[in-house]
Image (cartoon, rainbow, N blue to C red):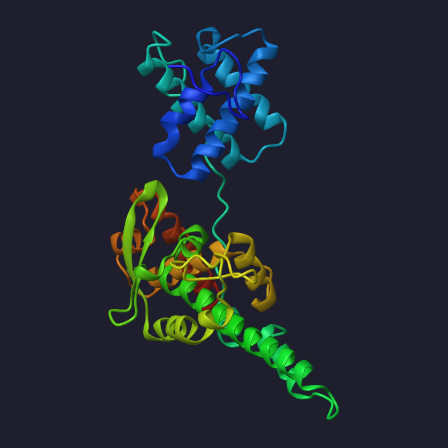
Length: 328
């Protein structure tokens, strides 16, 4: 079946059909895998390979070595190897190849870099402090000159209401990222029907379009409720998606960059949205939570993915031991 060539299409490599097969994966995975395979096809083309049938295991290993010499991180090389295994496995099943040259293709394991975890003090500032954010700025609108026109006062009052509404949004976003350990894509994609304030749960769609329900604590539910009842109506507009929980300053669904800006305004240290997910998982394990419970909360398909957080906890255990033990 012929398919329309997309931006990653390379003649003779069937990337259009491979992209259709990838539609069962998340959008981010599909985009990354297509880009990774297209990059390999171009590299292989310079070695006079005109299609997947010209590729053998040695060439695949040379390509991974080439990526390493070009300075790619081990995690990036490992992902590209996974993309190639998916592609050549698909080619074999599709009947384009008699054998799969990528079978048992090794790649450098991602490095020992542990997830960044925020300390209790940093979380306190992030979740409770306001820094230079919207709430700090909103107070200035009260000090209007006595002779200002009523229309100007009205505009200032409207700006103050919107600023206060966005502060409620920021509170709810940060509380939810930490309370539920959501991926930023899950938070941005959260719909109103997925929020149950009475039961204190949120239902999100994760990787592979898998739906899961995650509990949240009372303070998070309160922050969500205030945003939905007081903040969201103050900033919603005619083009606002009716189901979207979180909105940006254009009254559209909140995006990952918007979330990053919220963190940049509020965090006392440089960080990123995923750090709150790391922190939630690590703090649960430090508090005695079962690893499989944390796996379910995070939506990990494999327990091996969750186990990295036990490494973080072990590092902290060694640090505390070394600092506190009299003979350490």
